[in-house]
Length: 383
Image 1 (tube, rainbow, N blue to C red):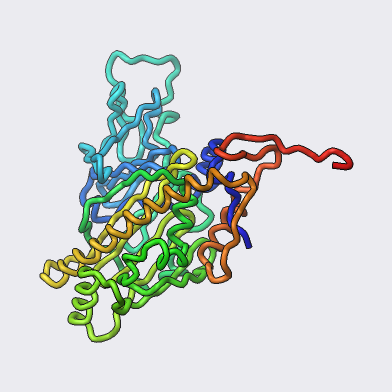
Image 2 (tube, rainbow, N blue to C red):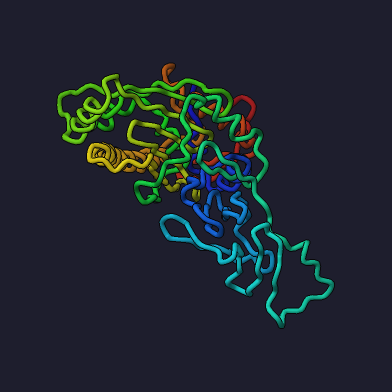
């Protein structure tokens, strides 16, 4: 089996198609329920050229809308630059452009005096709703109707996971721009062969190498026990393993779930780590990192989280450099060139199959080196 053609990472015309075919109908992680603790709290979430706002209602539920005013298209909620969190007074969304105001159900309830319209129907100008769902404390949204409920998808792969509702955010979310296509970044997350090669300094990692297996439909799963020490071990990894041995007699492990198309969840003894790859223009993406954990202020747990984050930060930096290097190299390949995928790379094969099923290759033309299109031609007779 071969990977995706190089042109799929380079053609600028592919991004809008992928946003519509893949990201609009997929469940996207937005936040944890603890990020929306009270009525009127809201969060902005952007993905694939679309913006969403999810709001905590007075009754305690969640409502989601496209983050756009129905008057002249202004974005309603900006939110904090890092977390996207905001607060809506009285649960109302007021457009900062012309002052149109919507209630928590998305209905248009107020227009400033002086703005008059012929044959105006307020009901026809309500906010566009989104699909919003919770799974064990995690909040998801979809811009178009997903094929399955999020519970059906995740229960198949993480049915034994505990309820995560009591967790709280333990680090500020990070959104790091990356000069690599989203598909490349996702494949790198599922690639297991590169770890000992591309990250030799992190060979004594916290957990053993991953072996992904299908979790049913649009999910993969994996389990990894804590890694053993090795030559070149770091202080952070040694300390992490020692703290785990002191804390529990049985071997500790981490459980992983990959949700199509772009989300990796890691449940470790010290909390939940989330990596989400957000698409940008072709050849660009954003890597979104979040961490949540159950309330525990003990010194041992604080050290566990600290050492875990140190190793993750080093690995993240190494991964970002590798991704840029591979993206640049893709431009040197032929448009239809695709390297082979090893038989043991279950995650990579699964991802390539999903992409091909949802993104058929265009028959009219294909991009050449550097993303420029070249016309497919039929060889002349006798050529």
